[in-house]
Length: 133
Image (cartoon, rainbow, N blue to C red; front, side, top):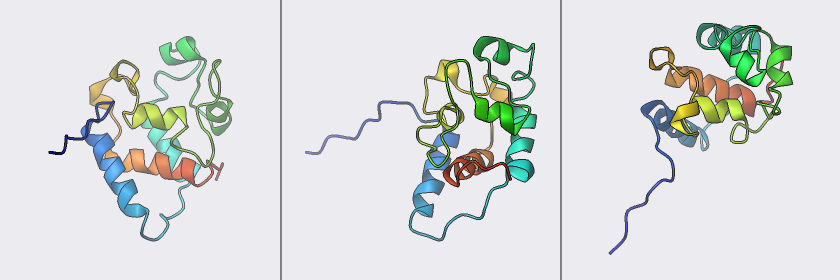
C-alpha cells in the first residue's frame, strides 16, 4: 500500500495556483516578457511599499525598501532578496508564494495578499533575470 505524499510546508491556495501555473508552463512556450516598470512596480506599490519605505515597519525591521528598482535589488541588511534568474532561491518569491513559515509570509495582512496572477508575474520577472525594464 502506497503512503500519501506529505509536504513539509503548508501550501496556501495562491501558492498552489502558482505552482500549478508554473508546472504547466514548463512544457509550453516561454511566458511573455515581464517589465519591472509596467508589471512589478505597480504590484510592489499596491501591496508592499506602505510598509517597505524609509521610516515604516518593514524597512525598520529588515532594511528593505521597495520604492525603487535600486532599493529592491540592494536587498536587506541580511542580504539580497532577489537572485536574478532564480525565483526558487529568491527570498521575495519565497515570502509571497507561501513557501516560508506563515509568520513571515508577505504581505502580513490577509486582506492585502497578492493574487495568483501577481505572484506569477513576480516569479516570471525574477526567472527572466529581474531586469530594470
